[in-house]
Image (cartoon, rainbow, N blue to C red; front, top):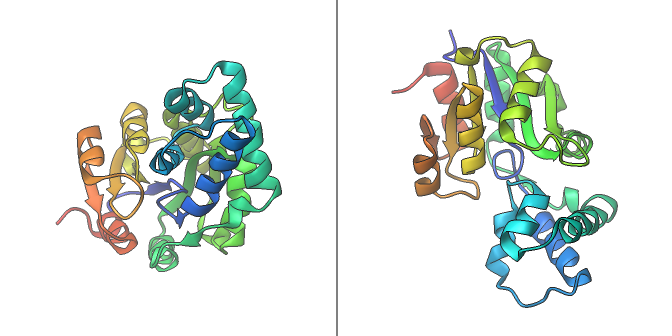
Length: 221
């Protein structure tokens, strides 16, 4: 029997390497807002957290400026094709297939808006594996990872947190899992560091998609 009945996946940095599309869209938004004095490394900090929070946290924007930044980002990301400027991590499809075939319920839990997340999942041919896609609202009012995880569990009909695992590459995935009462596995091949994931309290770590499937199907070794 699998160690978990339900497994939820973050999207950016866990299923797909989406850095090119996200960083280009953040750069577009900043340039349109007249923000040009920054190191490009800060763009990668936008991968994972809610965008409005990131604009405010990393560039000290007001609520109004951050909202404008979000709109500009989505213009480039959604309407100009940035959402498809990404690649699947090697081994993702095979690992999803292994868990799906073993009867594990799979879902996506991402801060990305649900419509966009579904489009990305469909673009990469992964829809057959996932029973739900839980994302943030367009206005980012449901953008906290805890709420997104709980919504995914509700969509999948999973009522037992102890039977659920959240896989993600950033501290927000790990802390959100803890707040939702579910276990977490930190993804080392994404955008977060080992120290970040360990400090956040990940229950396990995976260096590859295959190790996520191994943990789910066989438990800790």
